[in-house]
Structures are given as C-alpha cells and as structure tokens.
Amino acid sequence: MDRQPITREGYDKLVAEIKQMEDVEMPIIAEKIGEARAEGDLSENAEYHGQREAQGMLQRKIDIRKQKLASCYIVDKADMPKGVVTFGSTVTIKDLDLDEEETYEFVGPGEEDYDGDIMKILTSSPIAAALMRKKEGDKVEIELPRGSMSVEIVKIIDHGD
Image 1 (cartoon, rainbow, N blue to C red):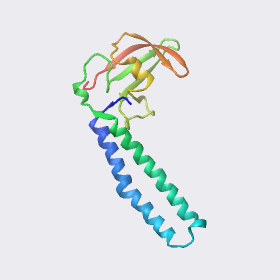
Image 2: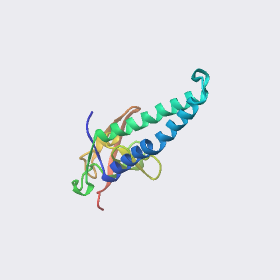
Image 3: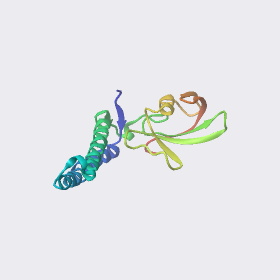
Image 4: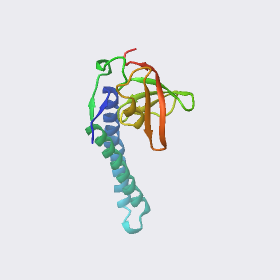
C-alpha cells in the first residue's frame, strides 16, 4: 500500500480516537462482559454475547485506525509547492460537460469530510490523483467508477493562503 500524507492535526486526531477507544470504551465493555459472565450459563446469555460482539467491533475500529496511521507520513502543508495541486490544496474544478463547479480539499486518512461546501477528500481518491501536480487552467480527464469526467482547474488555493 502506498504511504499517504497526513497533517499533524489529522495524525493527532487518529491517535486520540485510538486512545479513547482503548482506554475508555474497551474497559467499559470488558466490565460488562465480566458482569454478564457472572450471571452464569453463557450459552443462553444474550448480554454476554452482545458485549463480546461489541468488543470485537470496537477492536476492529481500533485496528482500522492503527492501519491508517501505519500507512501515513506527516506533512507540513506550508512546505508543499505553490501554484500546483498537492496534498492540502483546495481546488475548484469546473465539470466541462455539466458546466458546474465543485471545490475539494485534498486531505489524508481520518481527515476526510464529505459534507459542506468544500468536500475534504483523500489524496488517494480518483479525483485527487488525477489533479495532482496540475495548474490553474489545466484541463483534465478523470477516470471514475461511473465513467470519465472532463474538468478544468478553475482555482487553486495553496496551503497558507
């Protein structure tokens, strides 16, 4: 798997989520499992089985976040080149077929957010990957699962602007 850039803030957010799950949520579930186990026959103890399932799902969430961290490297957006699309750029593109504009910020794992006027999408997404190192005015063909999309880069807002 390719390593992906992430901001210090994004990295710290993932670390905090892992700490919350390991240090707060997991002990609560373990305590509930102990209480359910104390009730006796485990074969018909729905509370016990439910808590074991919750424990497994929480462990999976922890593992996913740890995998994200392992695949990342911290980048200071201020060190990124100016005037071209890179990690951390906010880019407005115009769909040349629909004559509509959309704005994206290219972020690392754990920082994505698809709500709001500016969608924060992963640098590994098809849109971000196709636009990397392009400049304002460039026309780009983006291959998406639903087909291709022709766009023009209208504006690039660099990281410190």
